[in-house]
Amino acid sequence: MNRVLVTGAKGCIGAWTLRALLDDGHEVVALDLPGNMHRLDLILGSDLAKVTLVEGDILDAPGLIELVKRHEITHIVHLAALQVPAAKANPTLGAQVNVVGTVNVFEAALAAGIKHLAYASSIAAYSPELTFEPRTLYGVWKLANEGTARVYHLDHGISSIALRPYVVYGLGRDFGLTSAPTFAMLAAAAGQPYHIPFGGVMLYHSGRDIGRLFARAALQSDFDRAAVYNPPGTLAGTAAVVAAIRAAEPEAAITYDETALPFPTELETDELAEAIGPVEMTSLEAGVAETIAAFRAALADGRISPPEPK
Image 1 (cartoon, rainbow, N blue to C red):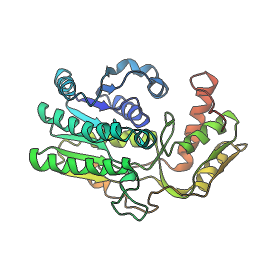
Image 2 (cartoon, rainbow, N blue to C red):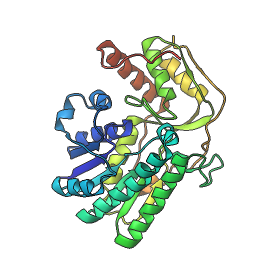
Image 3 (cartoon, rainbow, N blue to C red):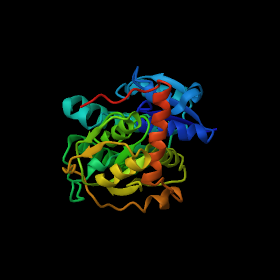
Image 4 (cartoon, rainbow, N blue to C red):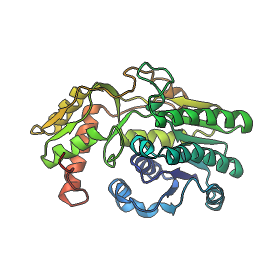
């Protein structure tokens, strides 16, 4: 039986990763700070009872090592991080959580004899020109983590697969720089107008797909490299996202800005299949329709509230 530790489990990707692991019959231990249970409630529902919840901090290195040993963890998905807005607001804490926290996770794996793990990098590691000259501190730290992973493989034989998600959307995506498209889907489901404050061409992934990719990446026990991949998705302009929202909700009043975010518009996404096997991703149209339908149901039974007007 695999027993998988997911750090940052109460985030959007964390909750969807738990969903994928539970669906495949694995035992899961979820580590995160206290509070913020709403994403797990939305995405896991009654299956939340199957999750071993542990309140803790990845900056507590001895506690993390003890947790991994006590729960007999066999695999790790490391997702805990401060996202761009929070990291920008508190750079010192951001560096501690995003960089030192990642070192602590590798140290915990080393202490427990775990030879492989998956972790989240980010599209923010790139510049718009597709060079490794990120325009945010968050991106700088994610790039540093990729280097950390390489050295732990060289020094200790711990292999790893990192994924660099771009725009993740779906249930639970209620925070972060690129959460606006999801808020637009929620607004459409609620019959409210919404303005997406950016434009440009980006790669879109549903939360369900990304969670499943992280789950699969963590379970590649025969992998023997420190590799980083750009997960596939749908490359689309914001106009296409708005069109997908209107296809699912014809009365949707969604607008957007033309200003692009400081990330690339073209990138290679085909190599991941070489590491984890065939990859099938939900189309943007299908993913948006699924998300809006899920929001309608959650709004109807009071599990979620409409977005606040801006």
